[in-house]
Amino acid sequence: MSKAILLQGNEACVLGAIKAGMRLFAGYPITPSSEIAEQSSILLPKVGGKFLQMEDEIASIAAVCGASLAGLKVMTATSGPGFSLKQELIGYASMAELPIVVAMIMRAGPSTGLPTSPAQGDVMQARWGTHGDHPMITVCPSSVKEMYELTIKAFNFAEMYRTPVLLMTDEVIAHMREGVELKESYEIVDRVRPAEAPSKDYLPYKVEEGSMVPPMPAYGDGYHFHVTGLSHGETGFPTNTPAVHEKLMQRINGKVKENDPNFAINEKYMTDDAEHIFVAYGSVARTSLNIVKRLRSEGVKAGLFTVKMLWPFPKTEYQSLLNENVKNIIVPEMNLGQYVGEVERYTEGKAKVSLIAKASGELFKTEELYNDTMAVISK
Image 1: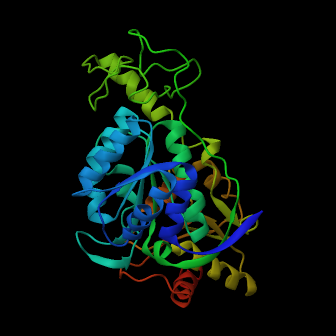
Image 2 (image 1 turned 120 degrees about the vertical axis):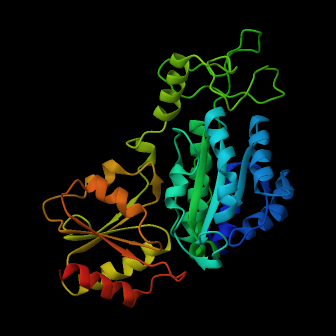
């Protein structure tokens, strides 16, 4: 059975995190993500978890990295400027292979920008914000229910691949309230623990045959192992050996693949015969759905591809849309054009790709997006 409940997006995020097994949240308040910290402070003690109010964004993500090593499922939350500050330790978590979840609620920038206004200007920072070659799993809800369900998936992905995972959406989804029905049961994934007993010969970064993800013990379980942000081999200790570093980079990046069937969580709406397909994410996907329905009522063959897995780019699912009927790919974004470049790259010239940009700190309204869409279609 499912139960109906009225929830704010940020509240749904916390409930989903606790359902997934989160037992520590460390954070620093920043609009428009602060309700995630607030609700965590209220709800975590009720399930035996811990809430830490840290002195800044860097300390927050450092705390969750440490708690992850101690065996807990963890999350922190932030927005634009705070996300920039967390990037170094997101890179550390990628190299050390620490399962952590970062909830990132986008607002208008750069810098302090418009702290209470929606935007989608951190899409490329999500993928390339830290330095070096690293994977970055990024899920993007476009409803309150998806805030709940994709938070659970974010934790599952973090545990499954031993990597930081971003739950990223815009202020509109984080602050809106919707009545949602939540299932009683969801799939919950826990990190794989070592099958072998602790010993002096234990290798913390050794993978089993056919796997790219090493088992992960907790500090305190009796296993003695070294963790570093430096390049390392199976022992966990630093190395400058080129071949070892190359092998590590190939494994860390190879474990998160764009064609992984686990990442096929995106949604298609009336795309089978569509001539004009919207590619949208976050709150913009909701407005785009209204446009598709209106265009269909007017006899225009429109469709919508709602991106819920921003990174890795959903290449296989997206390219399956590109049949001979498709004339236009329309990418509305609350920025001056970030994801559209990836869409154009993967379209490979099979259709015309058009950006509809809005960077005023306001959400897309149906009438304006309709008018902009008609301008694209009529060309």
